[in-house]
Image: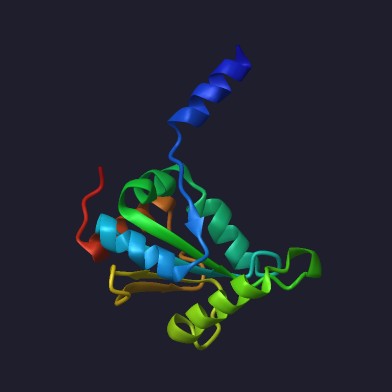
Amino acid sequence: MKLLFISFMLALSANVTWLGDFTEATNEAAKSHKYILINFSGSDWCGPCIRERKEILENEAFEKYASDHLVLVRADFPRQKKNQLSKEQTQKNEALADKYNPDGKFPYTILVDERGKVVKDWDGFPNESPENFVNQIANASGQTIN
């Protein structure tokens, strides 16, 4: 019975995908007329990055909103050898950082429109509840929360 309940809950939960390719994200955003949320993260060394991911970006309220309104991109910069990305992915992340995060801030999260124009940014851990974070995204993009 527990397994059935867990399976049911997983089926109901929002399914979000974090892309690693900004070109793919802009193409998807142009087709779907969605905004793009880019998260610059140091997944294995940056405490506030880990906290943002766990407390906000993996929260049900955020995932539900994101699945309907956003294209998600994570530009990760891990330091531990066991977590190193492919050379190709590292180059994509570095190119994205050159364009949107030249100062190397972590965590750094930005909302851009389908053409790549920055609409809003969050420098450091957004000290907000997931619901307030979603409200900020919706307000900045002129979207409504379902």
